[in-house]
Image (cartoon, rainbow, N blue to C red; front, side, top):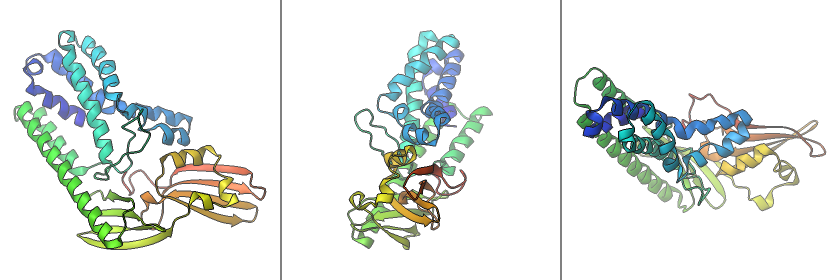
Length: 316
């Protein structure tokens, strides 16, 4: 959707507006560029651990837009016979890739957008993976363009102006809620938020010196749901440490922020579950790594991933 509306925005440029071949090339480039960073999803073929470790990494990094732009823009410009305006096609490829990475930054899942200088996961916790309001706004504008209702350049300039205002408002709202939670729990530790799909409530995890506090904020009211004690790495049991060499747990620790470990004894061994409290929802932690050990602490099996349907909350 954003690939289409970015192409509409490019119609502000007379070189695009007055040359159909340039317009078609820009549309193709923005559609491809809007998807390009997620081409790293191909690593899922190597397993969930590889996907967790590499998705939203190098293809979303700081130099990525500058690399993607000519890789997409130049071949597309040549294909559509628009090489005389190739730099315009490259520019809009760059904008499309940058906009994709920027929107991922607003999501709670996060993105390693400062690689290669930092492997830290950055996330602003402002938007769901799918925001219905932005989608409807851009879809409506795209339909108006399709049926020739308004001049596309000014119309999409207004649409993106509204989008920017919306993002600023959501960011201010999230900061306001974080301040409220800091006052409520008297903590200077990390606080993460995940908005609901409709945006009327926020799920939170607040870190204190000894615990992770989870709950929701709805209409200014804070509701605490659970409090989980923190376990420091230096206090991990021998059973827990025996799972840390598995590929799944290593990938999990590469990504997770609020780590909670649970050890369950079984008849023939142990089950160790590593969960990220950041994605707590309805008394469960759907993102986890589970490892089964025998009595001699040999790994029997391990599993990593999301224990929820893609359309179920949290929407990250």
